Image (cartoon, rainbow, N blue to C red; front, side, top):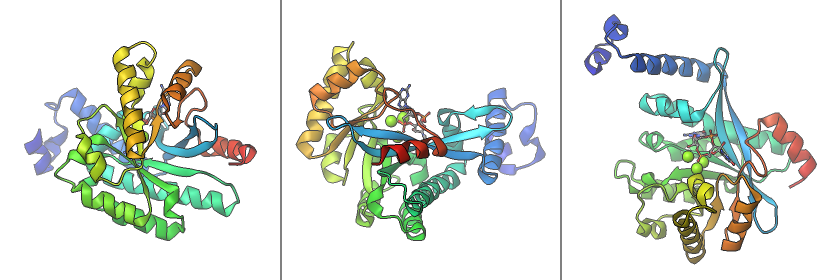
Length: 279
Ligand code: C2E
Ligand code: MG
Ligand code: MG
Ligand code: MG
């Protein structure tokens, strides 16, 4: 398969491709088309302060509206983008789109909290994230403190992307940093002290099991204590019930996001909400 791909000949699409490989190539082709033809968009999910109930942020989550297949989940197409060179262009688009959206809201007097964007580890291999973020902030005039970058734990351990330099450069710009899906990766706790991190996002799997599993509950409690001791904000992902929220509040968790309060919303729905909410 690899050899044929490198030759780039017609035999690329020959019958000996497994059907899953063919599906992946087909999705890659459609995804490239989608990026170039405006079929990608960002939805925004509000984040909330548990104690005060105030909105503290918005997480930008990519969506793909395919004319034939309907809405395709990022869980399905981001891995395909990561296996091709598309993640570079998609990542660049996400940064710019989020900044342009923020600028548009500010221009129209719609007040918003900060926006967090997701950056995949593969995207960092291009080594141009800092440049892209700086360029987008410059082009749109967005104050850097309104932007947050979410990275997963694996990135901190990666030798390939020199994360230390990159994180410090992002911090130098004034951008905030969050560790996504915290607790699921292999980070060494020593990294948390070394890197300029602002937020720990407790993975949804722990929130799910918080009330039913002693192990999950112990992990959540430990992350919250760790956050407090290191002076980091701790946010729980995927909160769906008020019982979960009460327990998180009892444990001292600062913020949450989840269907309990709001799903990710398309821009028009979010705007209606922001205008009536007045952050
Ligand atoms: P993530 O960054 O950990 O995002 C959280 C996911 O949980 C989102 O799924 C969100 O819609 C979902 N979620 C939030 N609250 C709840 C809840 O209460 N219940 C349930 N069942 N789900 C909830 P989504 O939007 O499908 O995104 C999945 C993953 O795809 C993200 O996980 C992130 O890793 C990736 N992703 C999304 N947008 C982007 C992007 O712009 N760039 C990159 N590189 N990855 C992205
Ligand atoms: Mg995220
Ligand atoms: Mg997450
Ligand atoms: Mg995730």
